[in-house]
Amino acid sequence: MAVVDNKFKMSKDRYDELVAELHHLQTVREKEVAEQIKEARSFGDLSENSEYDEAKTEQGKLYSKIAEIKNVIENAEIIEKVSRAGRVSLGSKVTVKDVASGDEDTYQIVGSQEADPLNFRVSDDSPIGRALVDHKKGERVIVHAPAGDFTLEILAVKA
Image 1 (cartoon, rainbow, N blue to C red):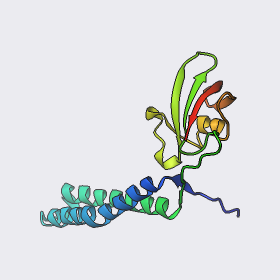
Image 2 (cartoon, helix red, strand yellow; image 1 turned 135 degrees about the horizontal axis):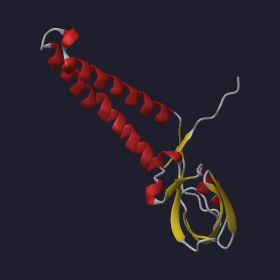
Image 3 (cartoon, one colour; image 1 turned 180 degrees about the vertical axis):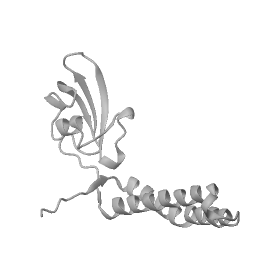
């Protein structure tokens, strides 16, 4: 069986945020949920105790979230901003123009854990990110998106 390298690319800041969130969940939040379960048990018969069921469900969600964050941290790949002589790379802010419509947008290329397309932060693994990486100002790239291909012209690249 082939081993797949599932690394999560992210900045050091994002990594630190995840470590802090994990610590909070394992200390503060875990105690809160344990207290909810303890309180719900005090209400009597567990078979008809909706508070107990809700607390146990919350505990399951918490443990699932903890496992998810641990997996991301264990497989994190910290990406430093690297300037490649005016070429698009992780951390770059890229101003592009849609050749067909003339619309201009500025995207920041980030790791998958930091992507937020609504705020123009696109992953280097996304169709736009993949198309832009390693290209420079003045070049045109074809984006192979699920909705169809389109062409972008790179107007500016900032590290």
